[in-house]
Image (cartoon, rainbow, N blue to C red; front, top):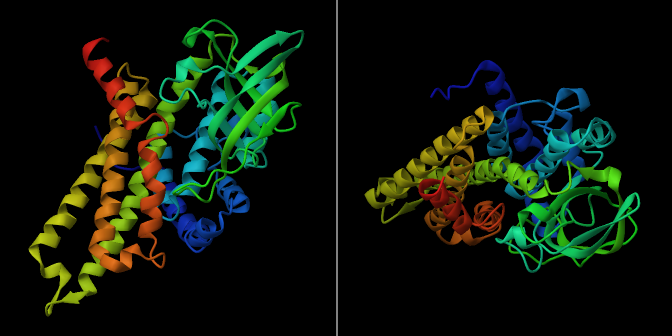
Length: 379
């Protein structure tokens, strides 16, 4: 399998790197400190085609492949994993509308989503159903041309600041077959939001509960048919897992580079740190882990693009490995920096805090093991 980039891929990878260096990196520490959701920076990213990376061109998307998206998210996350991760979620929700929505829905929402004049959130998790997503309880009851919703969603990125909530609700019996997907607009009657969560990381994107109290949503906002919601949700998560893995890779690689540069200039005991074999070996292991993670991400993206039968398993493997490796590499980079790494003067501690949640969201890494094992033993 050849992962050499063609000229077009190399060009947009470099564009993403340059954008991250000029638009994300100078401001990321401030966004983190003051909990700023950088909407204007996101819209600048969208102007480069990053608001609808794998959305069709007829509604303003870039129509790129999942492999291409992985290159972009790795590059962007080298400067700010938190903002890049929100961009991934926005792309995932937009893709669901593009892939499963009807023509009227696509033309109604996707031009704005691709330009990021409209921002999207993805609502699956609930207070009582995290890993057991098929147990969700938010209920939607048909009432004429509307659904009436009651329930809550938890840990929703963008909640309260975004415009469209791609939401999984229960319209039928218990289990995955009773779940339906609705696109819920921010001004819907009965829609409200909880207080902003105080988080370890991901400070540049808001996170809150989404509450539905007799919330009326037109049937015309249903994405796909009744009962298709769980399948849509899981299809979206395959790509989301690749993106989050790529975000971990980008931030970890940036952290390793900071540590490498530190080893070359810092002296202790009359020698540069780079001359100590124990630290050389540590850096070598970090580089090896990230190289393996990158290949797993590329492999999973290629399988998802090709729609191979084992694509879901490959996405789970890449997400599990890359997010674990990414956090560990950030932790090792902080250790190599010593006390300096613990200071907010350096971005490594921010990368560490931002990457920790990647081992939890888009399916915990324990659930990734469940998916992998299921493929090995039952499929």
